[in-house]
Amino acid sequence: MKFAVITFPGSNCDRDVCHVTGEVLQVTTEMLRHDVRQDLTDYDTVILPGGFSYGDYLRSGAIARFSPIMEDVINYAEVGGPVLGICNGFQILLEAGLLPGAMKVNDSVKFVCRQVKITVENSEIAFTGSLTRGETLQMPVAHQEGNYYIDPVGLEELEANNQVVFRYLNQKENPNGSLADIAGICNQEKNVLGLMPHPERASEKILGSEDGKKIFASLLDYLSSREES
Amino acid sequence: MDWLVKVTIQLKESILDPQGQAVKTGLEALGYKNVADLQVGKYIELTVSDQEKKQEVNTQVEEMCQRLLANPVIEDYNYEIEELA
Image (cartoon, rainbow over all chains, first blue to last red; front, side):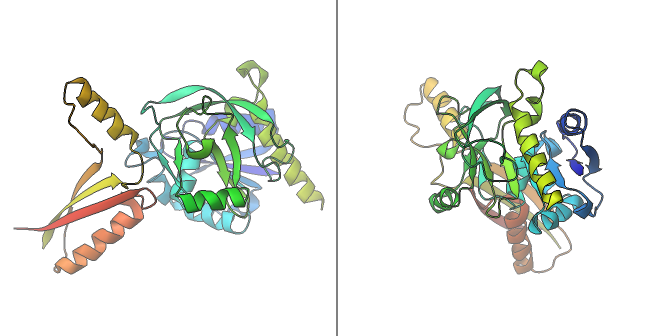
């Protein structure tokens, strides 16, 4: 099994993700540059990490979305490859149109960095198969543009298709004012997931929570069972 | 021929603008109680070269706004095109 983590100029969680998937979960993980085209078919999962790609200029993720490798990521996602976008990675997926909606500046207009509780709303996708619906997870968030927005028709579609995967536990736990307390969504085909909280920063006991590891572990369970069948 | 393009980008009217709200509150604190509405947007100035027809500049600017400068999911944009001497 092999994972790819894409490094954009300004990514700062790429090594953290590599550490968790490579060292903690012992999956071969390679870091790929943003500006080199790649055949991603050899990889079992592609991860877009957090950070401030291109300094968040214009809009978070807007410029990274046009990196050469993003064409390969889009092709990979279109044939069903699992793609995970964390924080800035989520923002890039939105800008790329792989996920619907957009990010606004947080309600507080401030950068928010704290622990939040989220609930699992859909436990039937590759990234959440080993979790239970309604289960609460604790992970840190660290962002200024996580205020998820989609128009009313889009929201209805998300809810009807079970595309809301994670929600902040309640309004108090919601760090950014996102619509319907949305913390993470997937695409209609359920192979692309974006979330604002950082599972890679909550995958070891010493960091205060191992809840994030459950997401990576779910993914591994899914991929192993896929390999067996 | 060179053209000066001035693009303004704002959140769509139907979408709550947290920055605008914060700035409006700031003005209120300074005593300006009659500011009824305030939106924070972006202003981008660019020069397009080697294009003879304004209509073609227009087409290009429209495309650039759609593809990168604005996010049509949440933002509206306007632009003016001036011929540079």
